[in-house]
Each structure stands twice: as structure tokens, then as C-alpha cells.
Amino acid sequence: MRKNLFMRLVGDLEMNYPYFQTTFDATNQRSFSALQKCTSTIHQFAKSYNTYSLDEYLNMSERTSREALKNFCYGVVQMYKAEYLRRPTSTDIYLLYEAHEARHGFRGMLGSIDCTHWNRRNCPTKLRDQYMRAGSNNDLKVLYQSPLFNEKYHGTGPDCSFYLNDEHYKHGYYLADEIYPSCIVFVKL
Image (cartoon, rainbow, N blue to C red):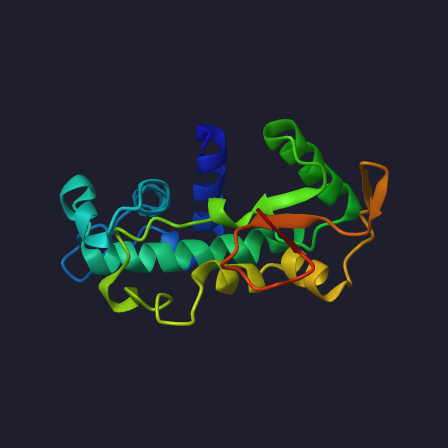
């Protein structure tokens, strides 16, 4: 993440949410700054750190790191959802098509399910194995929460058709392997 973007997030969170504003406790000890709390959060995202592993690095307790992550996510969603977390437009989808075609050589591809695995090595203990039970597939649970996936699955999204080998296709697709269910949005390799 670029420094100016990070600093913009820190400033916006500090200005809009009391949790990120510097306070003093009963012993007149200063609380962690917005910069420290956001740094903790970004380390958790970027490097899959457990909250307890930040205790030595930032001298921040596991509880404070967890609270910072929760408040960061809530604040970012509330502040930026109208602009950045909106439903994709036809233009957005065509940009996805172009990016995947340039990178992978597949026209009409929206993504690859097998590239969406999350590193579960540092999964919080209470969440460990939550999505790994028999008959459960974490990739699908994540996808079902995506507006783009839901619109493509139900055929209600914007018409973003494309041609491949002189064949017209109405919707994009996700590359998947044989373990995924048969679905109009999956192309199995």
C-alpha cells in the first residue's frame, strides 16, 4: 500500500471515529494513536499476523489488535462503501475481462476460484476449521457474498457479453476445478 493512501485512511478514521482518536486513561496514560492501530491492522491483513504476534512489535495487546482490526474494517466500509464497495458496472467488468486476458490469456474470465485461497496458518483459534467441515467449501462461502458472483449466478447483472472463437457468451466466468458444483458461472478445467 502506498504511504499516501495509508495516511489518508489513518486521517479519515481518526477524524470520523472516536476509537481512533487519542485519549488518556485514568492514570493519564496516552492511548495508542490512530497510526499505531492502523499499522497493526495492516500487518494483520498483509502478513497474516496473529493478533498476539503484534505484542512485541507494536507493544499492543492481542485484545487491542483485535479491536483495531474490527474498528478499521467497520470504519473503512462505512466511509468508502458508496464509492469503492458498490456493485460493479459493465465498465468495471470489462476492465476485469481485459486484466485477466492480459495476465492469463483467458477472454471473459472474471477470476479463478483456486487463486482465492486465504492463508489459514494464522487463523484465530475460535475460527479455526469453521469453514473446513465436511460438505463445506470456504471459496464458495466467500464468493456467495460477492455482488458480482451473485449477479452472474442469478443472471441479473449487467450484460457484459463477449465473443470467443466466433461464439457469443452473455456472462463472464470463473475458472474452477472439478470439485466445484456445476454452475453457469464456473468453467471447469
